[in-house]
Amino acid sequence: MNNTPLLKIEHLDKHFGRQHVLNDLTFSIDKGEFVSILGPSGCGKTTLLRVIMGLEPPDSGTIVHNGQDITHLKPNKRGFSIVFQDYALFPHLNLYDNIAYGLKLQKLSHDEIKKRVMPTLELLRLKEAVKKLPSQLSGGMQQRAAIARSLVLGNDLLLLDEPFSALDAVVKVDLGDELKELQRRFGITMIMVTHDQEEAFSLSDRVIVMQKGHIAAFDTPEELYLNRSGDEFIKSFITDQINKRARYVRKLIGGAGHEED
Ligand SMILES: Nc1ncnc2c1ncn2[C@@H]1O[C@H](COP(=O)(O)OP(=O)(O)O)[C@@H](O)[C@H]1O
Ligand SMILES: [Mg+2]
Image (cartoon, rainbow, N blue to C red; front, side, top):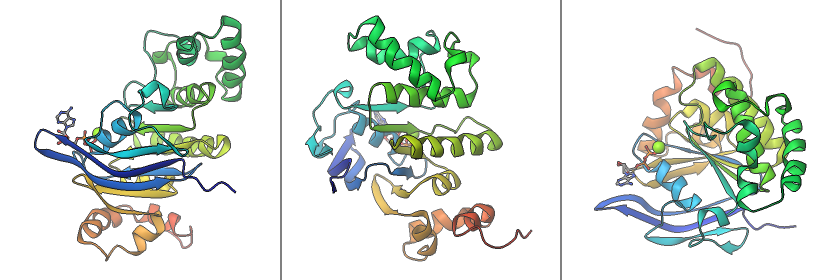
């Protein structure tokens, strides 16, 4: 059995000027896990994703991917994909070219690219939309396209930065369910940044709660909920929303019981 974590982060540190944005972060993520990084705005979530992706160098610490130290590798050598809130896809390229983009950079032949891209588009129910521009695709299609891009590149880690924050509540739940389904089906490890507790709790295997650049907790949604008296920050962060969102929490701890007003 292979117990090597997919991603192992040790003593990661990052300053912007005098601001300590990532403070001695150490954690591991297993293959196939869906992990959310949950915390208030400004706590360092996006910076952590950018450092993992290689878009921002850390001051110190190490990042290990499948046992290999990648701390100083260029972003395109890491085998990770990233989806930002507003630009998962290149707006001026049609769907096919968006998915093929990374393969073109690898200088694969036209035929090889087509051989990889078309079956993936078919698998993700996107074949009808190959010629469409991102603006002509639904939110669900754009999300599936981002996943298709990871798959054709053979990437095993998808990073998502607040992927649902611009959407209304109903669409958000649908896309969240679909993302989770695709993640299970294709075994892609995902790290999703969010400031939305309900989103993090309903989708994730484990949740990293971040507070001012450090990890306040890293556990399953169930444990975080049940241990909410443990830490003052966790307590206020998590209980704040519980009354408002009791419905989600009940679903999460077993789906038992009926709804009360
Ligand atoms: N490139 C940068 N230069 C200077 N400060 C930055 C930069 N990027 C982020 N910051 C600061 O670092 C802190 C964490 O930012 P960020 O990681 O974007 O937080 P989050 O994604 O949790 O909202 C914020 O105070 C932000 O202003
Ligand atoms: Mg952010």
